[in-house]
Image (cartoon, rainbow, N blue to C red; front, top):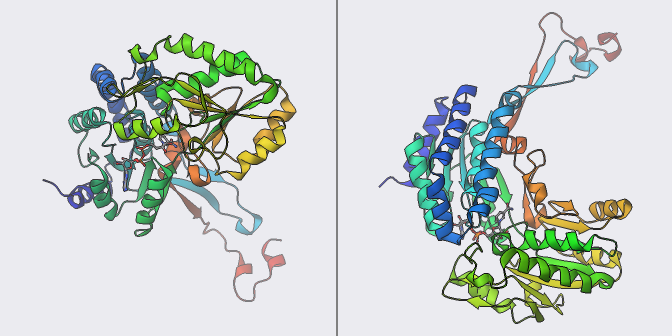
Length: 451
Ligand code: NAD
């Protein structure tokens, strides 16, 4: 069996021989990636069903379709992105031309989680290919069906020295992290993100960390309550709440809480039926460990809706918890499951202050109609990215960088930002030899030189 050392050495040699750099090569590999997904679409649906009981609708909108859009967007713009970026020069640099080259880092390691096991493995890879790197991908050991399908599809489609998959859990990742990579792109928990950064520091390898956190949804007194409830229910219970940017909890104005909760219950029933545990299109919890962790949260507050579970199928109903306080266990960590705690406020500034005192979230969602208040919320609270009057939607716009800040991550990707995440910005100055400005040399006078 090939050692990780050998695999990384092959990737490095392939990169150093200049194979990955040309526009034609990058374009061809992106087309290959899209064709690969197209060819295996039905196997992908089956794998996602096996790992998470994902419906075809969710599998397409949040994984397969998302990747097609990213690939198409990248193919359309790659030529432009690869162009050296000309920049101005100050008067002291008369006669020079300055520009920024986008240079591939080299060998990129991509480590992905289980919750969107296809999309979160391949979306960074699109950026890595576009930027001209060779790639080693380590998908999650918890989404086994998708990870082994990834391994099979990729080994059939790509030269293994250019793009290869290494499957395995913590031991494999630990071994991989001993190797020298030129960049590491990690998606996962904040806890493991710290391990990745620590290990990367041994080789001074730059990292992009796409982590998690508790993303609030604020529902203000003047919001369109019905639409807020509809969009929050969709954002929370898509993938059974196992989404890094899912609204973790709702902070609702006391005066509209009753109306909001009534609408939330209506939409849960409408989207997931009266008996979600029997709904074959409702996602399951990834494994028993996470299922048991989530069960513990059902002890907090009062179950206002849902609460039903099935340990055999690992299904948990969309659940709304009322009478929650900041001290409850459900408020101490990212929930990452179909449980929506409700907190209420009477003064928006106090609510924002409370959020600001917590770790910087990956996302924030504000529901309210007043432009001035919307602006205040966006400016006052730090967070990775977010939406006003919606949930999740910001991440599907390839023109917006997607990433966290502080505990929710560092660096960003999607669209051009993925290309940049895997590129070094190399500054180049081209000097003229037609004349030589004397002021920089000993005895030279600035006023004479630029006169
Ligand atoms: P995780 O951190 O447990 O695992 C992620 C990856 O790291 C996996 O490939 C795993 O094998 C590896 N890993 C786990 N423990 C390790 C260790 N000790 N040493 C080295 N590698 C290790 O995360 P997860 O449970 O797969 O995913 C859930 C988390 O990911 C949530 O916190 C969620 O918010 C976050 N997430 C973030 C984003 C984002 O885009 N910001 C997207 C999806 C998920």
